Image: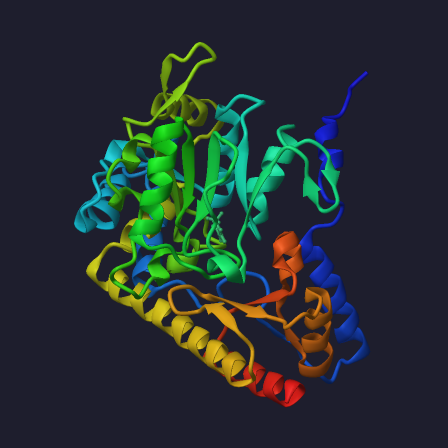
Length: 408
Ligand SMILES: *Cc1c(COP(=O)(O)O)cnc(C)c1O
């Protein structure tokens, strides 16, 4: 008899974004004359930069001729891309990362979801609340979380991110082995200073723990004093893995490219305490289960690092950040406390006691604006909503005018 992995039954029944889609569809069917503006799902809206398109096309053209055709590429990604990533994203900022520590992939969702399979079943995991659901759900599927009771999984150590702690996770009271961190944060938009990350690196070093650091939004950081990579912190190479993505940075959500950094010094441990190279394990995992990212896509990603590519990507991000500014100011003017939007494309709005789904419904029904109810990201996501800056300036401006009208 073919039996199911019953850990899947422990997943919360509905997926946040399908719930939202249902409510939006119902609204649109009842009010066809009131087109909605979507500031909900974290997907970019502007076209790929021209330099990226040229890189993509070069790759496609090469595939069209026997002389330049490429078959299977290296599972870790082509050296031309890994070298640019290492030089530009890390070495230029004083972070010691070499090209052979970078694993190019089809995105940070897969990598941040897959990485947990390198660890034992009974490790203790610390996860922020609210959180990007991938970290939690992949551990549920793997059977690491226990049952879901009263809005939480029994065996997970939750790190509450609340107004009182500036929406920053605090060091857990009990000892944990694996820590998920994401800065700039999705969904709250909060950021961590160097001192904040130093605290985590020190904790991980003292407790032989590992940090999985999601830096998918690093390119939105404006404040030059904020770290963009965990490897800007001394000692992080031994205790941290970093996930990055071209999705939000360069508009690759539909093109698919990201990468994971696993430093050679990063060690985990056998049951008897012997050191095991995490780099060797991830390399083995990827070589066995992954066959690389398509050549044209890697050429497109390489073009992000060209002079034109850099200028265009900057313009793209500037445009989203202008939107973020408009959203943040509007909500503040209306009397709502917010976090995020200054170094991140998300604005986390305190609903002043409203249930987050009620706030979501209010904005949908009165302003025809779609946001994301914070409750979908965890217990501590109530009473907040997340408003995303990923849309056109025109749509964001209209949306905020409607919100002003609705909430005045
Ligand atoms: C969007 C996002 C990613 C990137 O996912 P891709 O699979 O690279 O598109 C990773 N982490 C977080 C927190 C995100 O919001």
